[in-house]
Image 1 (cartoon, rainbow, N blue to C red):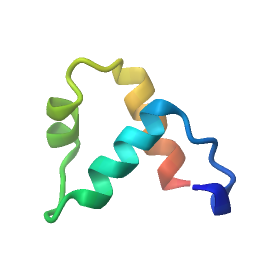
Image 2: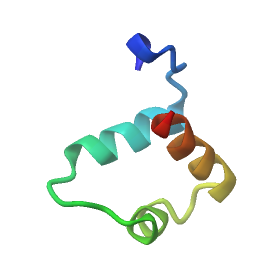
Image 3: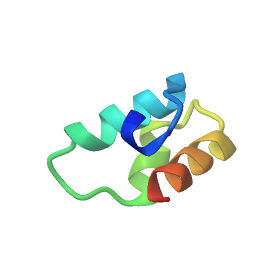
Image 4: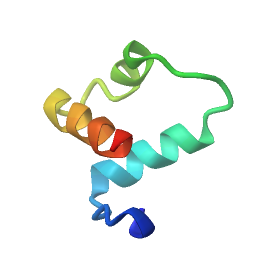
Length: 52
């Protein structure tokens, strides 16, 4: 993340670890289900930031 100038927040680190450790393709609904207790807005912003 540092090479892309993305500040490593707790949520970003969790989502990054989740995505990189997955052995299969994940849909948005899969991610939402596994992060159900997290704020959806923060989750969407994190995914958008990774997309940039």
